[in-house]
Figure 1 (spheres, rainbow, N blue to C red):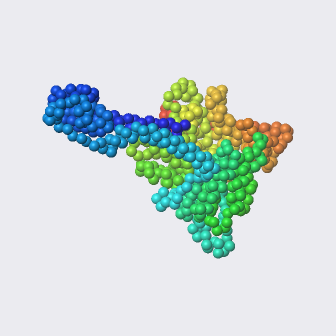
Figure 2: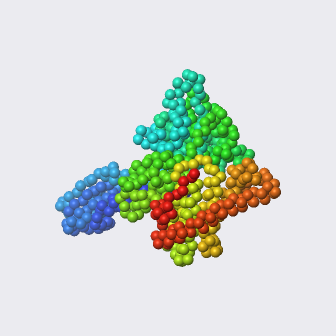
Figure 3: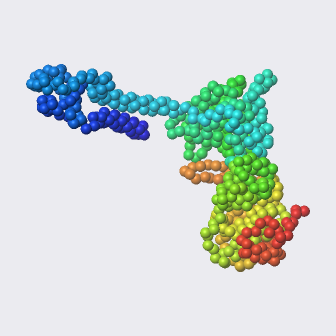
Length: 609
């Protein structure tokens, strides 16, 4: 439809141009008047004509007053014969200048040939453009099964290298061997070593899997073909498999190279699983990927790198040796890695001299590289909004809270009573977190509404921990229940403000029992098999592998952990009531307390013995 409209507008434009040309030629005569032969004869007899110009079948007469008139005659009849037949006095012609002008080729073309040729040209041009559109549609239909992979050629200016990837040291070490295979394959072949067929990058979203794959191609200086798993599958049967064949044919022509398949779980899911039956098109695509990886020769120097954050759903045939020989796990960055990532992303941003990236890294525990980049971008937006020339610490802290909780809801109007309840609630969280040695240090308390939260207490660990003890979980449950306990202690009733805290505390207590085996009565085992089974848009999260009697004991243990955390929080709140009131008074006055202000009220945090 778009091509049809485009062709119509094109022909309309051509028609208007031709009409303008004809109008220009028609308008060249200016004030020239067309008259009949009898008028010319009368003017000649009355000696009003000074000049006659004959051009083909046209006679142009110039009168004594300077005006011109055009007279048409028969083409085969000469001017002298015309005057003789019509009885013009020859003596009257002695003072008239008569000249004969041959018609030019261009005039002859415009007058005699173009009116007949133009319709044929227009019809022929219309047929040509319509045929070209049909041929384009046919070529697109024939190329529907061709690969749509993005091809990144090695470029010294724009290529990514390992220097552009902060953190992920172990992953880069694993991938350096792939670079060596691509750059110097002979030294490996001489020892009988085969190049790895495939590398599977595993990691949470935003940890830099795509950037690492591009940096491998940049380090090896080889072409990089990028395609997402969802781009293979279309509504037409066989297109996915055809695109796989096209992709690997293109790769073989450009070897050595890297083929990167992002989100491979879109086509690489376990075959024959799910309540809704199999997906034939997806499975055909997966089968073709398996066949193409089996067909690689050891000397072709083509490496397939795939990325996913769901390795548990991949088909076992993808993971066997000979296909994806290596699995590289990319973890979330630790404290030092986060600081390095922040240093990478501030290159093009003007930072104030007082910016402390280490403090930013401390407050962003559990953040991925993409989330850290987003924080710096949000900070730049906040600074620009206030017409600043540089990014300051407060912009970065504000950006962290905006990303974690949401933007400030300054327009939200709350009553003095709600404000006082919120202050006690958040002061309770901060007080209990401060006086429990195993809990994370408090960095900020605020009763300003953000997102869906009426207030918030920001905690962050002083160091990254990869293993957690039972006492740490009990402490976290106590901190979560502290707001609820303060409301009960001060106001003798609770509000809905603790709903989210109660939900998180219950979930954590359930994990202690069913996942971590930390229940003293039920013993060291897990309960429930968690599998993803999607049917009609619903997810069945857990399949029970225990009896109803055990389910009752699980509920009892969960309630026991909740009561244990509740008791710890209640003791601290009663013993530190003076400090609680001081925190509330400061919050009611300032609405926000930073770490230094908070610790000036309650003192330094107790150290774990």
